[in-house]
Image (cartoon, rainbow over all chains, first blue to last red; front, side, top):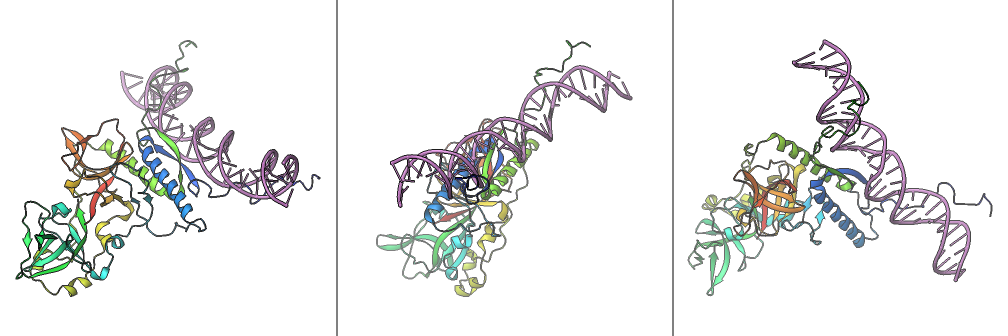
Length: 198
Length: 198
DNA sequence: TTTTTTGATTTATGTACACTAATCAAAAGT
DNA sequence: ACTTTTGATTAGTGTACATAAATCAAAAAA
């Protein structure tokens, strides 16, 4: 072997550690973080690592899409609020959450109602809340329904007591409303979500 | 003047830049952050800076104007409207509400958190609910805030008790959390809406 | 042949360090 | 006496760099 054929010197394209082989699968940058935010940022990074790992596991052959697009992203922290971040199931998702998409599965049959009164506090429905109502969902027993009772809109839970259907408030201070034969009762739809302004 | 009395050499306690004179008022640490999280982390840092500045400027008694504006007129059915009980179908099809618009006034400073635990039932926050959080809203006393306390995310109402700030749960079964000097508390934002699945 | 070892090369990563900012007090200036 | 300048000292901050990790292919070993 001569010096001429010795192939080790100089540049050798293709060799070396691959780009994107970091734990995050992308370049990093050194940032100074105050100590009080260190835990928070670290958790964020840990979750990103896990997320990256899962993405690689789930799609070994697929290239990651270029996320540097113009799509405005609203961070969604699915972590447990009471206990911190550690739950692995609730991962930090970094994508746009479309509230319309989240709350309205069937636009054609969905409408909104503003709630009044305190009869449904137990179901998390406070006065002034906006209710998302789906007319296409079957109003079975147990569902929270919006119904017009003798011309008045009410929100109650549909229950069966002693073999009879009743509109049951979720507040002990309010009485059940029996559904008599004669009463004009029309169920408008089933409440699927409640939007509560703090 | 002799060499003996020359006072400039050697250690001189008390001289020099003060500890805690950083923008954050506390020591920092260099951390590597992946590019995709850079914006998020930077925002967090900017917010921390502002928070620090405000803490210095503001007295604990100062209340900033309540920015909770009224919800823009929404073509909903209120209970009173329902008395007329018209043909439901026509009216609300044309008036569709954009929930994103309704709930997100500032997309850049908004994020979501899924709530856990029952410490905030009184504020209408149930476990599993999605919280809409605005970072740009001032975290005044009385607001429901999402904050990282010693690295743990929590949702509590900010109250002033006996002149001291406390994180107050909205559930008598849970104790107040005093904000000690040593505690690492970072307010992530103010909860503006709660989305509750029935 | 196939496998293992080894040197070279390239990227990733934590942090040491050079530089900046802030502060104090002596010295000089007024 | 009072103010300004200046050198020394201490803490803050961005990033350059030394080291580590990953990868390839030649060379050696099996």
